[in-house]
Amino acid sequence: MIEKLALYLSYPFVRYALIVGILIALCSSLLGVTLVLKRFSFIGDGLSHAAFGAISIASVMNLTNQMLFVLPATVLCAILLLRTGSNTKIRGDAAIAMVSVGALAVGYLLMNLFSTSTNLSGDVCSTLFGSTSILTLTGEEVWLCIVLSIAVVAVFILFYNRIFAVTFDETFAAAVGTRVEACNLLIAVIIAVIIVLAMNLVGSLLISALVIFPALAAMRVFKSFLSVTLCSAVLSVTCAALGILISILAATPVGSTIVVIDIAAFAVFSLIGHFIGD
Image (tube, rainbow, N blue to C red; front, top):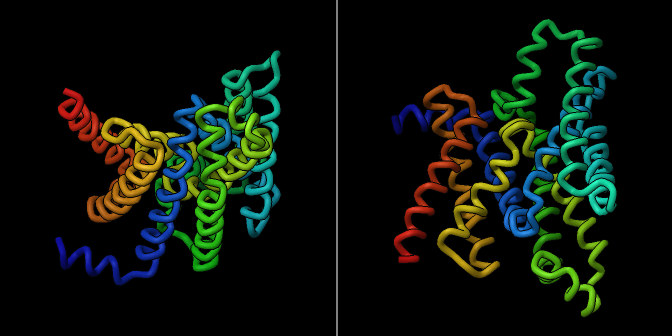
């Protein structure tokens, strides 16, 4: 098995997949804790389905670089979702449901009506579940992911204190001078960037698992915000790397394999937390 793994690692597309997968897992885990604590976990679903709709439009328009359209469109949806979610007539969960179902339906309809692909079912499956797209990355896509990931990590570190304050008590954060609305907007934009990056790894239907499971697992053992965030990051990166390697060796879907390992890690951490708590 070691020889087989070494052989696979000699191929550039496998190394690309590992680099991108680790970076995406790291970025996803950083804000996962914030989303769970703010009870806004399913924003990943809403934005991932919005990204699916954007990808469908980009495919219909035959754009050579879909990222140039998908990324701004998803960021715009994140901003609109944040604005709509604060509306007293349409609460956050209803706004997410509207975006999620609407974008998914419109995207699939457009792909059926205007797609010129001979394998429509395969394209949809790859987009929804990330079955093989992580293994077909180009060098340009890898560098784009590296640049965006560095930007996400840098912004998180730079605004860590403000994100921490907004996560636990927006009223107190506003009282001490934190621009809560701007901070929430920043969080939404970062999440949108992470969602677009993660679609190549686990697909639009499984992104929430990549964001939520490491955070929930870390919370079972650790209590402070910093320790939970650090544990979540390490756990997410480890699960992503293992998932990619196992999927390559066992010929299983990459996204589903990573999520199953995340679930197993959550079960182990829950067991550890149970004994520690006792």
